[in-house]
Image (spheres, rainbow, N blue to C red):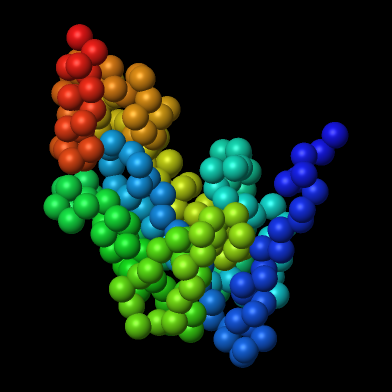
Length: 214
C-alpha cells in the first residue's frame, strides 16, 4: 500500500511556471552540496533550463542513485540554456564559515552563467546579488531547476572525490564516504591526522568527542 506522501504528486514546475507566465525566460535554479562534509570543497551549481522543458526523473540529488544522477547530469548539461559550477575550498570555509562559503559558491556559480538570469530559485538560501530571487525550503525536491542544480553540483563533487581527492589523499576513504563524517572517516582521521583539505573548524568537536570516549 502506498504511503500518503507518495500519493501526492509534486508539481516541480510550479515556481518556474509562475515566473514564465510573467514573461521571465531566464530562470536559474541554484543549489550546493558538501555543506556537512569534514573534507573538501563546498560545490554549488546554477542552471537555466528552457521554458517548458519537463525532466520527469529530476529530483533532489540525494534521492537518486549514482547511475541515475550521472545520466541526468548529461541530459541537463545537454538541454540547459546555461549552466555553471563553482567551488569554495576548505581554508575559505574555515575562514568565513560554511554558510557564507556556501552562499559565496552559489554567487560564483550564478556569475559564471553565460546567460544573465532574470530570477533565481535558490534552495533555502539568499544569495548576495541584486537579481530577484526566491528562497525555497526543500527546493531541491520542489523545483525542477533547483533539483537540476543539485544534480550538477553533486555529480561534480562526487567525481572530484573519486577521481582527484582520493588519489591525492589515499587511506581516508574519500571515494566512498565523499568526505562525510562516517565511522571509517573518523577512524582514519584519528590514525592519519587531517589533510590540508580537511575543514579544521569542523574537526574540533570531532576530536573532543573522541577524547571523551577514551
